[in-house]
Image (cartoon, rainbow, N blue to C red; front, side, top):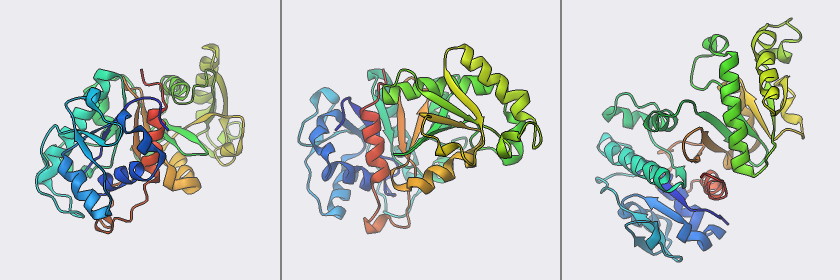
Length: 323
């Protein structure tokens, strides 16, 4: 069940985005909440996908969410999708895919809804929009956000990522006290919005093996991470760390973690429960959740994709306080 309205961009029509979205609502309890779900896409994409799934669901084309029906998938068609082929992401659909995302994001912003995004093929988008690097960076720039944070979550853990898509060789010099403070404040506020917990406890990981072991394996903890933790504690936040990354995730008293780099967080999340992992962007003027997988064109024609990540993304978005 979801409590609040969400708007959905289902991603590249050639991939599994439309499939996992429809699977998430057709045969789950979300079907009882369809009036709270507004999809931005060409309804033909959904019609084609329903046919491939051998499922039946009424499509209700609306001008805005106030016209949503309880027993149909409610669709705003902002733009017609060019002819496409399942399993083959092509440049001719890139404008449609990106414009659908823009419309959905602007709609979420205007109405203070949470946004759920399906997978896109970044390479295909870049064939038409050269500087596109991904949802997170695009949305940060569009809404002039000072700082955003990637948060990965599943049924076991919530882990923020301090530095994301940069080479490992650049991580140490990219980390500074101010960055840790800014991103942890976003994580703290985001966890409050997502869970309703007014005083979440944040665990901050060390960068080096055994969190540096008192400077024996590096001094970033002493020079940068510990001073940042002290500053955050002075702001009234419940913080622990720096934690040794090899045992940190065994704790039961931490509500969310801040990792230092991409592969300190994602392998743990995906190994524990890949099928329900959700990618969340915090720091935007609305909550954005996303599937934690790609377009998977290689299996799109089979209609056998697991929909767990999309299902969890919709539930999480629909139960967050995004206003």
